Length: 445
Image 1 (cartoon, rainbow, N blue to C red):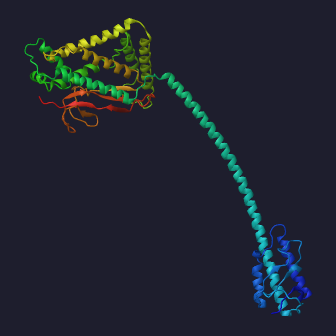
Image 2: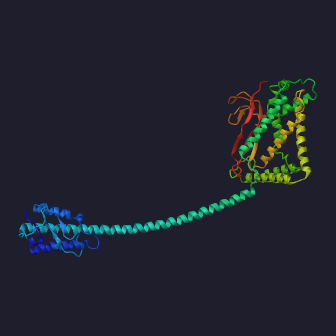
Image 3: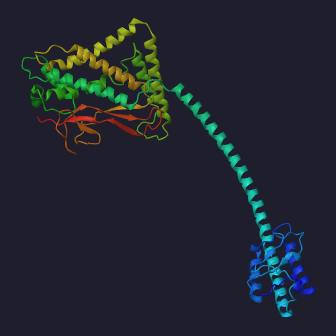
C-alpha cells in the first residue's frame, strides 16, 4: 500500500488541513490540551474508512501545543513511513481526506467549546459551593460559639442552683432504703417483743381493772371485738401477740410519730403549734401540682427540725439529756400501764425492751421530721376504724400469717404502711409513693 503524506496533497489541501489543525490548537490553547481522547481517534478512524487503510496517527514531536504548526502531522501505514516521496494523491482521495480532517477539526473545536463551557460552569459552581461552604462554616462556628456559651451559662446556673439547694436543704436527707431499713428493724423488734412476752396462756379471772383494760383494748386496735369475745381473744396465746402488735403500732403513731418527742423541753409543743398554724394556711384537700405551698411548708419543717436537733447536740446542758430520759420513761410507763395486764404471771416487766422500742421510734421520728419529703403512716383508719378488703398492691400478710386473697376481709394491722409524698428536691408532693406495704392479718374468733 502506498503511504499518504501531507506533501502528497496539493498546496490547497495542505493549507486547509493546516488551518483546520491551527483552529483546533487555538481552540484548545490555554485551557484544554488536544489529545487523541478529545476526538482525534474518532476522526482518524473515519479517515481510515475512507482511504481503505488501517493507519496509525502520531504527532512527530509529542502532543501538539499552541506554538506548534500542522506540518508535524502525517499519516502512515503499519509498515512505517516511506523513505521516498510518494506520488501525489488522487484528487478524489485528497478531497475526501481533507474534508474528513476538516470535519474532524470542526467537531473537535465544537467539543472543546463545550468542554470550555462546562469547565467555566464547573468553576462557577465550585466558586458558589466554596462560598456556601464558607458561609456554612461561619454559621457553624457562630452556632458552636453560642452553644458553648449557653452550655457554660447552664453549668454556671446549675452550680448556683445546687449552692442554693445546699443552703436551704437540711444535711440529714436519708435515702428511701435507709428509712425502709429503720422501719423494718422496728417491725422486727415489736414482733419479737410481743411473741416473747405475750405468747403464753394466761389466767385473767383474778386480775383487777380487767373491764377497763378490755375496753381500752377494744378502742385501740383495728378490729372491733365484741365484749363477749374479748376474754377469749386475749387469753388465746396464738391471738394475743398479733393483737398487741396492732395495739403498740397504733399507740406509737398517736403518741410518738410527728410528736417531736426528741426535741428538748417545751420545744416540741412550740413546733407542733407553729406547724398547725402554718399548715392551716395551705389549701387542704386540694392537689397542687406546682407544689409551692407544700414545698415551702415542708422545707421549713425540715430546716426547723434540723436546727433544733443540732442545737440540742451542741448544747452541754444536762437538763436536755434529762428531758429526753424523762419523755422516754413517760412514754414507756404509759404503754406499759396499758399492756402489762396481758402479760403472763411468769414474766417480769420487760422494761429494757420497752425502752428500746420507744427510743427506736423517737429516733425514727427525728429522721422523718428532718426530711423535706412528707411521710405518712398508713393505718387504714376511717369512720369505721378499718378497711374490710385485702388489697395486694398496698398490703401483705404479716410474718407467719396465712396468705390472703384479693378482696378477702382482714382484721388486724400488724404494722402500718409507709407512704412518701414529694422528693428530697422539694417537688412532687401530689404524687404518693408507697415505700412499705401494710402488714395485715386475718384472725378467727
